[in-house]
Image (cartoon, rainbow, N blue to C red; front, side, top):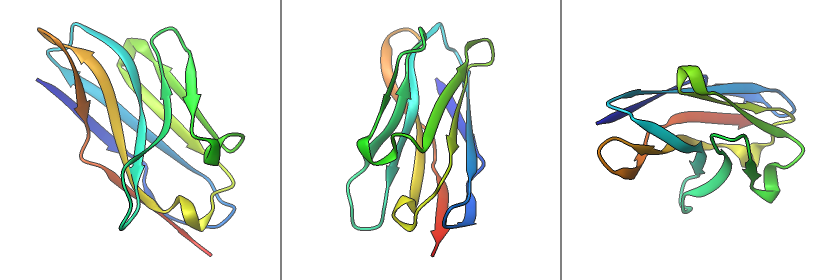
Length: 118
């Protein structure tokens, strides 16, 4: 199995910054993509950003220019640096990986709350 443990969420004022971290552990043979999704109350879960093992990134239009994603392959850890936060960024942020144990599969963390006050 794979465990994804997130940290770094919290309450911040609009315009502020937060850094999320997510460490993957367990019977992992290989990791392809890692990243972050978010879900606001009453809305569907949506992509925030992903990064492949080769470093290719993908961002939601709403966060481009404000968020950056990075990855430490040796530590199986992914980071999300969030700058210029807006109240509409308020959501539960979920870590994600496309990981291989015996088979390739999607795995999710428990989620970490990010609240941006106006």
